[in-house]
Length: 285
Image (cartoon, rainbow, N blue to C red; front, side):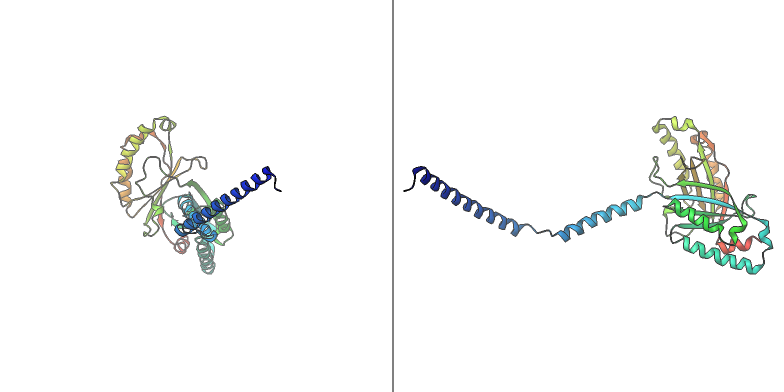
C-alpha cells in the first residue's frame, strides 16, 4: 500500500521528469536551430583569426618603430698614403664586404667630405632600429685595414619621431625607392629654451611659416630627427639635394622667418658628396 504522501511525491516526480524531458527536447531543438543557422568556428580558425590580428598589430608596430640615425665623420691618418696599392685594393675589398653585410641589418650610406672640411675625409650615415647594431658595425670598422688608419672626429646621434607641427612633409629616409641625391648637408640644431616656453599655438603658427618656406623647394629632401636626451643638440638636420645653390637659397629664406629668432645654434653645417666607399678610398691618396 502506497502512502498518500509517497504517492503524491511519485506523482510530483513523474511530473518533474516529464517537464525535464520536455525542456530538454526544447533545448535540443533550439540548439539544432542555432547549429543550422550559425557557422561553427573551430579552434584552428580562431587561432588563424588571432594570428591575423597579431600580424596586423606587429606590422603597425614595425611600421611605426622609431629608428636611430648616426652621422659619423672620419679623419684619415696621413700614414695611410704610404700603403702600397695592393694593400689599398685589399682594404677596399674588405670594407665593401663589411658594408654589404651591414646593409642586411640596417641602412648604410657613405659620403665624401675630402676637400670640403679640414677635420674629416668621409662620413658614414647609418639608420637602424637597433642602437646595438650601430655599435657592432662601428666596432667592425676598426678591425679592418682602413680602420687602423681612421679616427672619428664627430658623431651625431638622433631618433626619428613624428612631428607635432605637421604630418604633411614626408622625410627623405622614408622614400625607399627613390634615387639618392648627390649632396647631403648635415648639421646639429638647437632652439632656445624660450621657444619651448611659448604656447603651442604660437609655436605652430611660426612653424607653419617655416614649413611654407620649405615647400617652395620640393626638390630638397628633409630628414629631421630628434636628439633630446641622447645627444648634445635638440635636432639633427640632414638635407638631400642635387643643387647646393638651391639649398643655399632655402637657408637664406629660412633666416627671414620668425622662428629664426629662437635658433640658438645650427653649426657646423657640413656638406657631403654621395660616393661609393671604393671611390672614397681611392681619393684618400
